[in-house]
Image 1 (tube, one colour):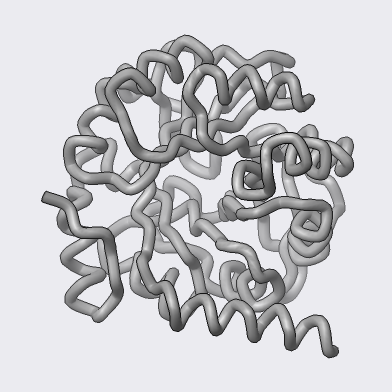
Image 2: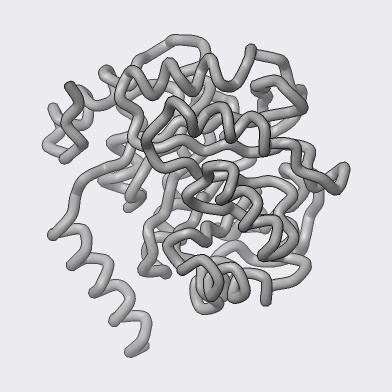
Length: 271
C-alpha cells in the first residue's frame, strides 16, 4: 500500500503545482495520407498530413502526435519524410509512433525531427525495449502507447497492431510495468471510443491515472470541447489528444482552450 500512496501523492502534488493542460492533435498516417477511422478500423483518407499539422500549429496546438497506423502490420515505418517536412515549419513537441522496434529506430526518428517516441506493439513483444529507449534518450522521450478495449467488469485489455491483436494483458498491470521499466508518459487510447465522438472512456482514464505517477494523455472519443473537462477533472488526464474533432473542423483549438479556461483549467496562452 505504501508505494501506491506515494505514487498518488506525487500525482496530487504535481496537479496542484502544474495544471497546465496540454491540447494535442493526433494525426494517424497510412502511406502519404492522413487517415481517420472508427475503432481504429474503416480508415478513410482525410488529406495530406502536413497541411493539417501546419493548420494546427498556426492555431496554437501544444503538441502533435504522428502515428503510422500500419507500420506494425507491414514491419516498417515511413514517417521519416513526413516528419522532416513537418519539423521544418513546426516548433512544438512532436511525438512519433508506429514501427519502432529498436533504439536505432527511435534515434532515426529523433534525427528526422521527433521529440518523443511512442511504442506499443514492439514494447509488448519485448518489454526491455522500454528500458533501452529510456536509457538512451531519457524517460521524457519514451512514451508507452496503450490501446485499450474494455473486457469483463471494470477491466481493460491491451491490444496491439493498431487495435487488431488481443494480448490477454491487463491495461493497468501493463501501465504499471511500463512505467517501472522507464516510460515517462502514457498515450492511452480507448479503442471502444476512438472515432465515435462519444467522449473519452473516463473509467479507463481514472483507473490508469490513479495507478501511475507519469503524465497520461487521453485519446479516443473526443467529440466536443467539453469532453476535455471530463478527461481532466474526472479522469485525471494531463493532456487530451484529438483527431476527428479537428480534422473535420467541428471545433478549433481556440474553442477547446476557451472551454478549459471557462472551467478554471490552465492552458497555454497563445497569441
